[in-house]
Image (spheres, rainbow, N blue to C red):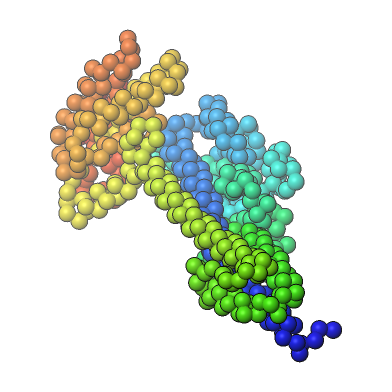
Amino acid sequence: MLNVDTFRNRLLILFAGLAFILGLVITLYIGHKASAQMTKASAQTLNLVAKSISTTLANSLTEREREMILLSDSPFFMATDFKNPQLQLKLDQVKSSYKYYAWLGIANVDGVVEVAADGMLEGADVSARPWFKEGLQRVYLGDVHEAILLAKKLKAINPNEPMRFIDFATPVYDAKTHKIRGVLAAHADWSWASQVLQSALPKDAAQQGIEVFIVNGKGEILYPYKSIGQVQLPDQKTLAQGTFIDDWHEGQNYVTTDVPVVSNTQMSMGWHVIVRQPVSAALADVRAMQKQIGLIGLIVTLLMLVVTYRLANRFSRHIENLAKSAYAVEKGQDEVHFDAQSSIREIKWLSQSLNSMTTTLLTQKHQLVEANATLEQKVQERTLALKEANSELEKLAHHDGLTGLYNRRAFNDYLSYLFGQFQRNDLAYAVLLMDVDFFKKVNDSFGHEIGDHVLQSVASLLATAVRSTDFVARFGGEEFIVLLPATTLDGAVLLAEKIRQSIENESIIQNHQITASIGVSWALASDQDANEAIRRADQCLYTAKKQGRNQVVSEV
């Protein structure tokens, strides 16, 4: 039993305790700071992952809805008889262009499937389906659900889960009467969510314990399937915080972030992307560093015990000096040197050991600070990259990727603004609706690459011919549309003729003349909505084609 009445043993206990406390304080301090920084960095990283997944989901939903709207608004779908074999061929082509389309078809106004890709479910009565009921009224986007009848006819992409689908539906109107002819609908296989996550998650996400959940507006888990009914989400008040730490009713804490999926679809799904990571995994590096620091401190402390016990009577004075230096380190001073000023070899060893310990601890501290600074810089760089990516996505959302002109979405926004100005200030505007003649023959004869070149060349001629205040957009396929603010009908006809001649005279394809037909209309005070002028221009375009193409036709 250790006798504490002797000076040597008391000095031994005192010095050992001091060394232990010093190491513990430094270890706890560094660990606390590192834990806070790593937790913050982990939350930021998870938030970036969640935002990336949310953006990809939103863009995918928007793209599928836009594709359905463009199909339903195309003259081919509006004017072609549902029994026409070419219509089924077109549906087959669209379905094959996106592997997650499970079903694509058109039902008539009575709810009977008239035509479908691969002939699937033709003749089936779908009048009771929500997508059909809603699709008669508006563009519809349905939440994730199972479809037992359709699942029996399809091979599952993921055989380990029941097939689930998302519905897209939109009305199809008659080109002449503008009355509804039926509903164009598509069922997309929900397994595309796995592909979205695989493209957005880090490769080592599983090793890091990162989990992703997609939740609908009712707070029900949609993805992954294995978590449905097994994982209990935090309450809505906690999720509203965006980024937080919660135990998820599982007995361990998770760093969690919740990001809504904000798509540009006409209906909001109310989805959320929730990403979590165990705090223990997020702080694994810090825990390892703390163990290393603690081990070094323990080794140095044991060394102090041995040296102090054997030589306490000879270097007590020197020990006091060393204790003062250790106390200075405890107070946070960096430039501290353990110098005992003794000729005793053992005391010098002790002094060197203390210097080595302090240097090691402070070096690791500086390394940790530098690592945190580097991590913060990486987070800033990734945040900047995300902002740039979002900016590019915003540009792509308003411009046509092939021609560089404005797309249909940007056109609709500007048309609404122009029509509002017309109603308030009586500032009339004209509309040019143009179609490249025999464009399908160009694609069939020269290939789609030359066809793209024709569209790009026509777009360039259009952009050059109009004023800076005019608005030019690709309306769909080989159709282009021009809005001419503060322009009379006669002025619009003159510009249309100028455009027609420039296209006719331009040598776009060698030894093959490219022409265009143009319909011209003018906004009228009697127009009930902005699309009436567009419809009149479309009728004039139809007349121009009927009369032989390569001409300008305007409303009387």
